[in-house]
Image: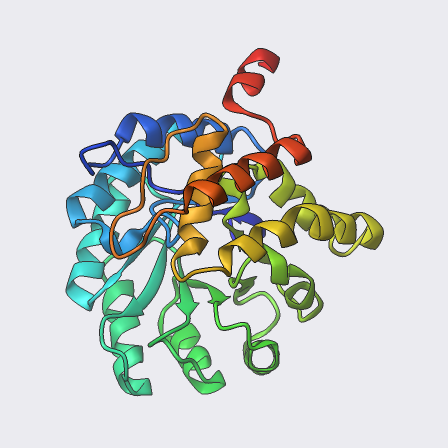
Length: 305
């Protein structure tokens, strides 16, 4: 489940701001029918930090049921060790195949504090877990090795910093000491940085493009090492334009993806504050881009089914 394109779906909200569980199911049905390796639900693109524990649990349960064993479902956990442990146990009870541990609430933990955070979560469930290196979760090679030795269920390292040098240093250090198969290594900054991560040894990557166009995420992974010309064409025509839109305002890494999802006929709704929706002109710009790229709509997919 940690090898290939890993989908990060949006969380659809209804007009009153509540989670649209029926929308979660219909969106997951589309993604689970594609060539992605697995699905993270709820995810960062899915506005995890705006959700209550009950909402997280409901989204995980609906995602597992919609995926119906066609794709592994990975549940995100975080906030603090107790809340994360409760979310992990809930994910296990709801049938999730693994968990993704996001950084803790405290922004300046030392290595021992981080180690204890992950170990407490690891002890709460037998599910395999991936760590997400970003923000407060600053990893050194020693810390990753220590965690890999003491937590048998530690399965994957997802880098979200875009620091390829540090990613390579950590990966090579752990492989030298524990062997090449101990952890899966994931690029976690975005679809647009897959090429350098793949060159540095990543075995998979997390994709927000997959929330509305999972086929392009799967093709991006299949071509990155074996068809350079096709990979560059996909990046130039499809990936880069969306990531340029995302760069316009903070929070647009969610807002742009929700707008694209909605335009194609899937459940999305507005993002929760403090994230803001795209402007009307940007919404139309996204519509034009999707039409230009001939991205399948919900209606066209249904006609082909």
